[in-house]
Amino acid sequence: MLSDSFLSDAGWLFFAAWSAVVAAVSLAAFGRDLLPSRLRLEQPPEVQPTDPAQSGQPGTR
Image: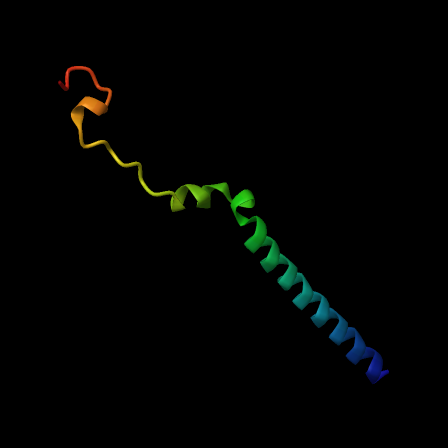
């Protein structure tokens, strides 16, 4: 009876650990696809042109 309980507990612990490993690997591999808002935070800000003639705004020349 005691060995059945131990095997059951060990099985659940293995299943929980395996699920955590699969979730971590999935997030590492597909995190940018699953969490697109995180991608927007990592993008550097756009660089503004220093030459006013290249900015494309009328009246800057």
